[in-house]
Amino acid sequence: MQLSYSQNLEDYHLDGVFGDQKTGTYVDVGGGHPLADNVSFWFYLKGWRGLVVEAQQNLADMYAHLRPEDRVVSCLAGRMNGEAEFYAVERLHGFSTTVRAHAEGAGRFGATYRTIVKPVRTLASLIDDAGLGAIDFLKIDVEGAEADVLAGMDFTRHRPRVICLEAARPGDMAENVQGWEADLIAHGYAFAFDDRLNRFYVADEAKELISRFPPEPAPWGNVLHLWDFSRAAERANHPDHTLAKLLQHGFLASLPALDPALVRQMLERGLRETGQALTPEHAERLAGLADPALLAAEKPADLESLLASRRFRVALGRIAAGYDGGLILE
Image (cartoon, rainbow, N blue to C red; front, side, top):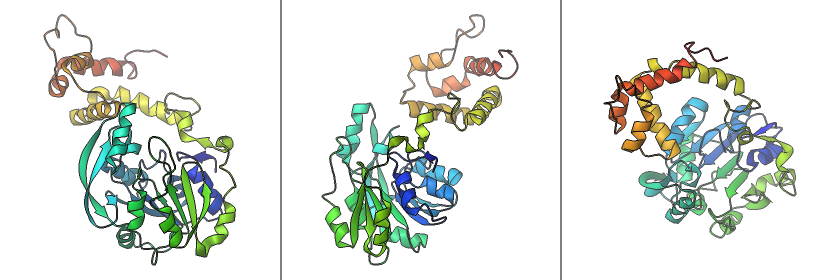
């Protein structure tokens, strides 16, 4: 393994357990982004396939583009089928949870959350619907609601060989195993490894796998990490730098000709991802410099008037001119 996609080397440690296995099956509950900080993506690249449960619809929708051969369900996994409140944290999606106090804790990073109602399914029923047979590993990371997910599992019928659970309480990182570890051991699982964020357990019938875990977490520098590279277009050492620069150039050159609906969608996403509100003052800045002879009277105050203004169209043209051959800068 050369490049880790996970938050805390989870994929690296699991690859040490299953590294000689070319295909396999995973269940990833709280999958998050399909690639970044993702535990199962490395295995998808290797040819494994599985079930991903991700409550945040915008993240779940990305899997169709990046991991089309996985089964993805956008719901909560819980003790019984039904509905529950879900606290979706803006921008910092890894803090989203069914535990309100944990979502509120994201406020110290300047993030807010919104409350939505999501369907709840038991993990056993989700696995049944996916038609999965043998499961190699189950990963659960649901920001403090791990006990609820495990309570909906039928360990008499579905027995993942390895289970990886986040075992640190969101926020203060205190150990958080009291609500589920004893039950898991009672279902025939033995503790195998602690990476200081997650705890790994092995089914009694697969106990030979325990010896494949290291005695201590692997050194961080044993492998490259995706987020060490930062943004692709900005860092020459990023593995996709050349492609990103080319796409950036072509995209910015095409700005004036883009479908207005697409431009609107990109602006809305940009505002959302950066946590900005479109105030009249902000809209005025986004409209760009005004040509006193023609455009001074235009003062967009919201998204609708911004998109309709000539000033905004000129701003797109000025940006594109540095890439479309209008200005020869290189």
